[in-house]
Amino acid sequence: MNRRLARLSRLARAAAAASLTFCLLLKPAAFAQAGAPEKIVIMVGGITKLIYLPVRLTEQLGYFKAEGLDVELLSQPAGVDAETELLTGAVQGVVGFYDHTIYLQAKGEEVKTIVVFGQVPGEVALVASRAAGSIKSMADVKGKTLGVTGLGSSTHFLTQYLAYLNGVPASQYTVLPVGADSSFIAAIRQGRIDVGMTTEPTVSQLLKNGDARVLVDMRNVEGTRAALGGTYPASSLYMQTAWLEANPKEAAGLARAFVRTLQYLHTHSAEEIAARMPKDYAGNDKALYVSALNASLPMYTADGKMPADGPPTVLKVLSGFSPSVKGRHIDLSRTFTNRFVDDVKP
Image 1: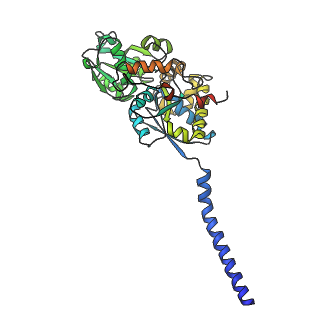
Image 2: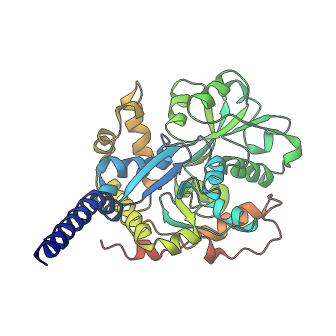
Image 3: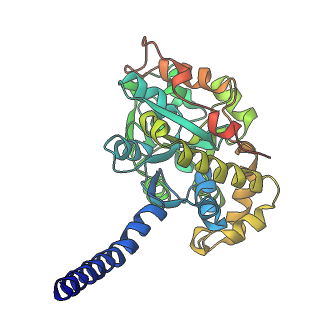
C-alpha cells in the first residue's frame, strides 16, 4: 500500500510539474496577446503634404501611444489608391479627402469620416508661368493639359468642377495624373501640364522659383467659398462603418489623439510645429517650409468636427460632374459622424 501511495504521489508531482511547465510556456504568449494593442494601419494620401500634417505630428508628439494605440502610418501619393487599400482591408483607416465617403456610398460602400482636419481643401490651381499669358482663369483651359495627383483623386474632382463652373466640359481638356511633390514640380517645369492642382509646400516652392502662378486659391475659407460656394471639408480620417461599429474604443482613442493635435496646432507657432516634424519634411529650405505652414494653419479645424455647411457643398461639387454621384440619392448622415470627437474633453 505504501509503495502504491508513493507511486501515486510521484505521478501527481510529475503531472503538476508538467502542468506548471506548460503554463509557464503558455503564459508569456497569452499575456502578450491579451495585453498588446492590435495594430491600426492608416494610409495617408501623401504624408508630407501640409494638408495632412496633423497625422504625422500626432505620431511625433506621442499622442497615439498615450492612448494605448499601435498605429502604423503608410503613404500613397493619391487618395484614390489609399481608398482601394481600405476597401480591400489592407488598412483600417485612410487620411484623405472627405469627398471619397460620398463617392463610395454611391458605389454601395459604407465609409465614415470621424475626424475632420481641414475645413477647406488647402488646394491651389496653379498655371505654369509659360502659359500664364493665355490662361487667366479656369475658363481658359479648353485644349489644355491639367495635372492632378491621380485619376479619381480629390484634385481630379475639384479640377473637373472648377472647369465645369467656368463652362468648360471635361471633353475639352486633357487630365494627366502627375502625382505630388517633386513629380508635380517636374511636370510643371517640363511643360507636361499647363495647369495643375496641388498643396503646400509644393505651391510655395513653385511660386518662389517663378515656375507657376496662382489661378484658384483654396487655402483659406474666403477663397474656398469664392471658388466653390461654401466651406469644403477636405483632409479627414475615414474608416469603414463596420470597423467603427466593431472597434469603438480604438476609434475613440484615435479621435482623442487627433483632436489633441489639432488643439496643439492652434496654440503653437509655425516654428514650434515645424521643429516637431521630421527634419526631411522641410527639405533644404526650412524658412520656406515654416512660411508655407504658417499660411496653412487657418485651414485646420480646432475640434475635428464636420462644418455644418460642408457636406452639402461637397455633394454639390460631386453632383455637378461625377456620373457615379449625379442623380443618386446620397444620405450625408451616413458619410460622417461627430460621435467620437464630441466625446473629447477640452
